[in-house]
Length: 94
Image (spheres, rainbow, N blue to C red):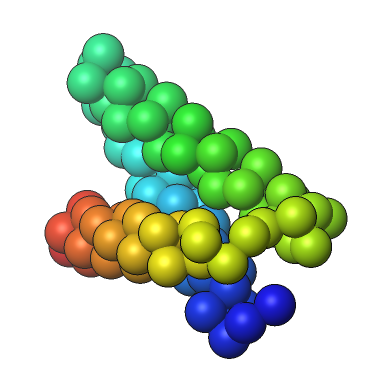
């Protein structure tokens, strides 16, 4: 695997950590403010968390099946997703 795929794995781990932070904040908010919007935010974060855990699992267990043509694509999608989650976490935490 190339360095780009290792960076992809690291970005996925960072996304998982940011999503765990979002789940924590949204769950705390749900205990205080029981609204459909708060439930929606919690479900949103949990679904993305599940998606990232599954993505990391397939990356670790099936890394030899990734072809070089998709490496750059996966890297940029993961980078944008991670940046989005980190910005959302920073805004939500404040």
